[in-house]
Image (cartoon, rainbow, N blue to C red; front, side, top):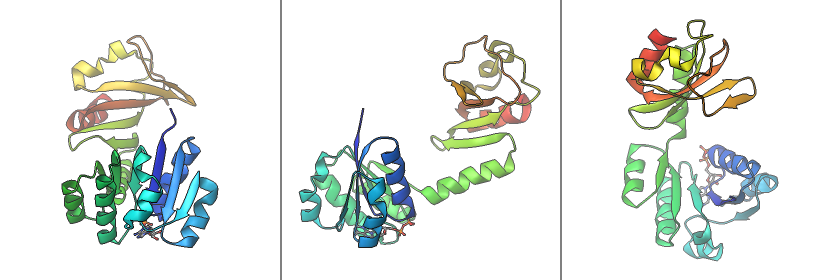
Length: 218
Ligand code: ADP
């Protein structure tokens, strides 16, 4: 189902979010206080307007409360980011996602009711570090401080074996969610499915278990 999104602040982060949502077929309203930012996004959004995210009347007249999600991607101006988030929650926006600049910004955002707080730089830093330290890890998503999803390249050790033979869940406590083979992706692998060399395994588990599987099982 098509969802309605608004992105406030069109720096590198906000404009990437906006473009991707629009590419995925959603309705996206792009907002920035600077005209050139708004002009740059026109082709990549459903509507784009010049407005200040801290102007309550402007937000109201845009009908902001009717959007399913509003993403606050105001960068360095922490005060504006906080005020904008507060106004959005007071106006009744259901889901407000906010980019935090630092830990104190995050704490204030939590207090005023932001529904999700993201730290794109830190998250990307962690993902890149994971890629660098392990040649087997293709991608990495942190679900919580303890649990993650990783994509691992199947090594010789697991190739030509079925999932039941590998017995990964019992031995390592990890679950294979899917197997990527070229452009195909098997999102419901059965116990008899065989892994081939070069497959990419999408695995969910506790970080310690994933590490053990990566080190000993692969
Ligand atoms: P990034 O690190 O994602 O590139 P920036 O700080 O460069 O972040 O960009 C933030 C964007 O937010 C800028 O385009 C800026 O014009 C916009 N912005 C800042 N304050 C407001 C505000 N009060 N209302 C709307 N947009 C704002």
